[in-house]
Amino acid sequence: MDSFFFNITDRKYKITKNKNFTRVDISNGILFLTILSKSKFHIKNLDRMLMFIVVKKGNLQIYNHHNHTSYEIKEDYINIYSSSKQDFTFKADENSNIFILFVADFFLKRYLSKDPNEPIDFLYNKTQNEFSSELINSQPIDALTLYIIDKIINTKSTNSLLCEHNIIEFILHRFSLLDILDKNLTKDELLIASKAKDYLLKSFENPPTIQDLAHLCATNESKLKIVFKRVYKTTIWHYIQKLRLKEANLLLKEQFLTIGEISKRVGYRHQGHFSKLFFKTYGIYPKDLLK
Image (cartoon, rainbow, N blue to C red):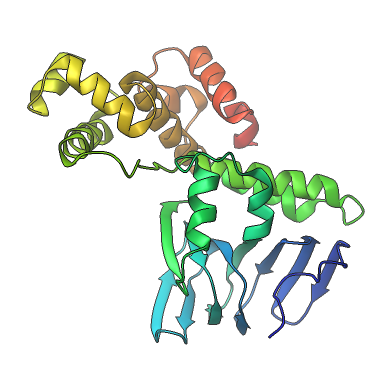
């Protein structure tokens, strides 16, 4: 059975178009498809890979012939799947706008850190499991994701190195949104941290004090701070900042609010401070995403 990716000796940037979609091979181990109309196609091979499926418009159905299971990715969502073998039929609605990135495990292997709790190591290890397909994450599409995809699609074919750089930027951004939990955590630690996270998700724009949050989680301040950092690899305050900026990134996609209105909605009084934090986190100013 042939590989879905290039043969190891063929690394050239290559664009293949047919009636329903365009396939772009960036280099050995990474390629993407863009679907702009009603289409149906089949993929069958034995590659270990990640699939990033971004449905900007329409819906995408996937039928897995290995386990006779159907999946649907709805409009405005991005799903990440791990797969060790493929026998999939993809079916897109009419007038769809879909971007699918395929990343081989041997491409990910170049960037391993040897820390199993790092996102890239965690996801590489997922591809080594014997699952035909496993949903890793599903989230709404944000403004930065659309911005990077636009850069990827519109990179000139003569500059495959820049396109690969944009692909890596896309992957790193999506990985940064994942919470990778250490396998050695206790049930008590997971319970306390999970409760705290749930409260913060509901109130990050005006969060409770550490004292109040500890009371809500039935623990003390000291234990809460220690446990939360152990589980989520960051402080409670920095996690609140992550949630605020993540929400701002989603609001920027809608383009119906000003930067000042978004800043206040996610909990920042000063627009300038918000913009600086956004740039520090994502490497681009909010105003540039609104463009």
